[in-house]
Length: 227
Image 1 (cartoon, rainbow, N blue to C red):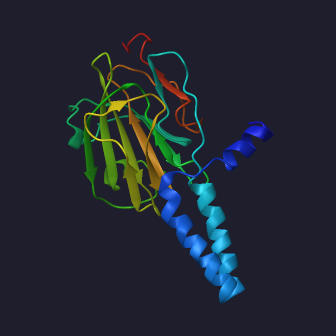
Image 2 (image 1 turned 120 degrees about the vertical axis):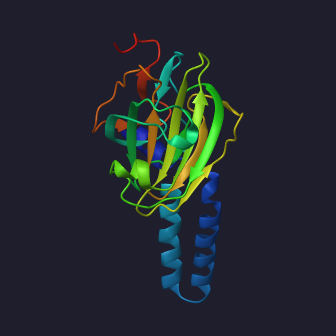
Image 3 (image 1 turned 30 degrees about the vertical axis):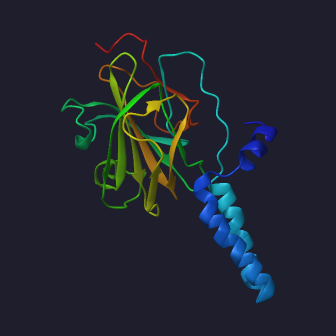
């Protein structure tokens, strides 16, 4: 990444979910200037952290249709066959799952992986183990979305809370249209996002690869099906 691109990423405007935290930081700074300068410095540090954590950069998805894009920034920690969340009703057959771990340094805005229609949203309470572990997909608190693609196939995107994450926000509803690269939620403050591919579709990414939400291609729906 070039220096200019890195600067634009750091200085990207914050997601609306940052507003209450920025307000708290602002109050702390003002009170600190009146009561104690230490409080003002702490408020300033918290303000800078919130501006960095909640940054919401513009992303440009690839122009070609038929691609599945990364639903989040972060590092791929798992590429394996797995059953989609039972609460989505996508059937008992395992399919490829790509797990992306988001550290506190990553952009935490979630983005739609493809065009389609949101057919089901299901929230499930759970634990808060380290989101980089595969067991987090099964046991952690999560918000799962089923999306029907224009060709009728279905995918799933799952927002998963992490060790210190305690809040999952989702801004879409069942029946809403999904647009590749569009924002649909955010997770605070360190988390995981899983993408379940349609049956027979092969992932094009590997463990350890860095994802850019809304831009990195995870799979090609037009590729020949798996044997």
